[in-house]
Image (cartoon, rainbow, N blue to C red; front, side, top):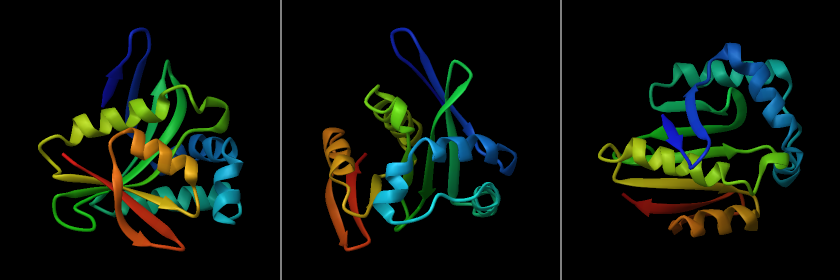
Length: 159
């Protein structure tokens, strides 16, 4: 998938286990995310195993986000989950140093365009008490859909 802004192009490509070093670097750039989850930063081996698991799931898509040849984020989503026709974003991760630059917004715009006609609803899972994530998804037209607190809340947008 490719998204072109006025000057820069954002594109995605599937993340494979060989991309574990890229994803690990992105994770290292987002320590507040792991603090929010009260979870330790995954090890490089755990990241590789996670990408192997994603590759084995026919409904799951793990994608690295690139701009000008550098990884700027990670998008993990699942098709036909929780219901047929749904697509659920499990993780949109942009390193803290790159946040508030439009990468998240552009990534979701790219995903929505890619899923047009293929999904009837996109859901976003928000883990922990993440007010910033809730504001982000609401700003994109998503609204509260499913309460599974204290672990997760889901926001949704009809396509």
